[in-house]
Image: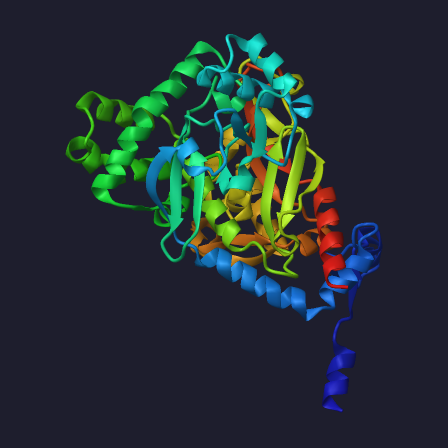
Length: 468
């Protein structure tokens, strides 16, 4: 009787789900209201969601997939030449960011980067000649992700380029990325002027060989440790890499000074280049992410997102449980801050493999660790925290190594679950650079973007089909 009396004497609480108008009306009448954040599933996805969430196979598979992702320990071991590491790469093979693409559908910055790479490789006399040959089919285009690699923005990787080799200290995986050129009029943003091409030649003649000599002298560099430290120093691992680049430079400084077998002037030039390029570590963080996402791939029934990538035309994802299949939607525009006189009219749609950072719990998912990022991509510091908090709703784990001081050292949200994305309609948050839509323009700004839900709808429908 005492329990019943206590229940009767308790002030009533009304629980509402996804109906703010009703909740407000009830509150105005006096009773306390508890609002549950609920919304119906995305239209047309209820049958697939019923299959996935009623089947223990997805839950068990996701535990395996996220465990494999978190077990990876990326380390930089060498810098090699692209043609020497990518099987089947010919003198006319060009890797690119995002899902598969043909020249006819390529965006402006993608075309600019391909043109620049052809000039760099000596396959064309001038930009017009390069465009004509590319349109004629004289070159072969293939996604970086099909070769265990990633490339920022246009991501174009040609045979002569130096690529970083990142391996798993706890396993057998290997991933590759180009080396970062810096900001402005650079190839990855679609620029192909003389300064961009000259820089690429310096990178293959000096930067790559010197870094290879440094690594031979000092041994592998623990990239995960550097990234973890940098998150506690204000980086996010995508658009803010100032701290992790500084930590990397400290790691190699001793060998650059007196250990590497390379001319002194070249070692000094490499030091100055990295010191003046706050984004140098971006490409190495990306290769680290690729290593983790590849380790998690191929687990039947898993809804873990292993790839998010854009080519300036399409935005594509892959899921662990659906293998190599791409799920594609149009690349969205970026809500950005623009440089100089550039505006949104000058901007290309979203582009690049750098969303691999978000795929493994960095970038837009870790913005709470880097409040200063908003000065580069827009938004507010409080908004950066809110974006990270929202990401815990659609991820499978909290990263044990990547921690956020602002959130009492809570691990970053990691392991995007496509089924949860569709069920909640909470979309992965991405911070990104913005390339000019006209070939040759280069960088025009940076900003924020959300992954399109259409990719995830396609993905969970395909995954559910594998379980029926």
